[in-house]
Image (cartoon, rainbow, N blue to C red; front, side, top):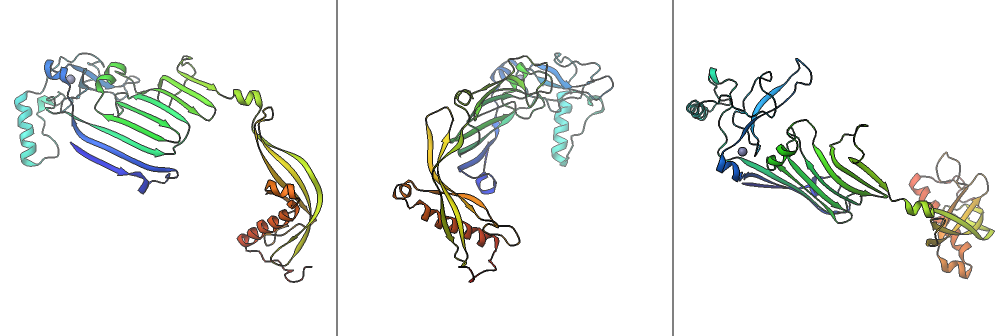
Length: 355
Ligand SMILES: [Zn+2]
């Protein structure tokens, strides 16, 4: 058994909000296959194609119970062998197989020599078949809200079983097997190219599910239960979508914005109470904003561009009670626009000449 792990946080790009992101592999894990060890393997024909006559097709031998393939796996004639058919054809004789192994090792060959008579025959079952278990662990913020999934791979899929559990903002755990679970794969998806997915997920306002659906596939003919979606937008339907609304409480009143660059600008100020929430629901977030409008040509913050004519700043509630909101707003506007000027590399031409 070999153990391997990698720290994705060190190499990954999406590490925001995560404090653990690791992958783990456990290689060369012995496969038990108890039943096959007691009773021997049960060889059947496996393969793919042809989709149409004359097109590429392949047939080989696999154990119907555990999914292990003999080595070599055989290269049977697709004309003669159907997928799923028990294999009762010839095998490479044990003596020749052992001899081939010995020669390969002795001469350090990259390819096993094959006797002319054994060209298409399957070889020996592996003595100690192994598999791999893999996992990926994320602690911290991932995406979506919740997802639980089990996927059974098709015969062409390198992962017979994979599954995951993801829950925001705690993290996610992904698991997969290589070779392990071939028994289940052979029971559930003995042929075809589609892995099957069972999934339920919640994202934002929607619950989605897949029930034995083909992975990454959707077709009009699919039965209704295969894919589903329920909108949780009931709240939205009842109370309306969340949005900002404004109510004017004071103003318009005049204010003077003194920029640190020396220029000053007269502005009209309007105090508004801002509400953020659903229109038909009482609960909402309240705040105070001062909307300001400057006279044309506005307050310039970018070289060669026209000035800003209006915008808004947020002020604390206590300045509304004391009446200091207008004075504070002017200061905040100057602060905000000065930051813009510095960022844009703007220096007003009127420096020192303003009132
Ligand atoms: Zn077996």
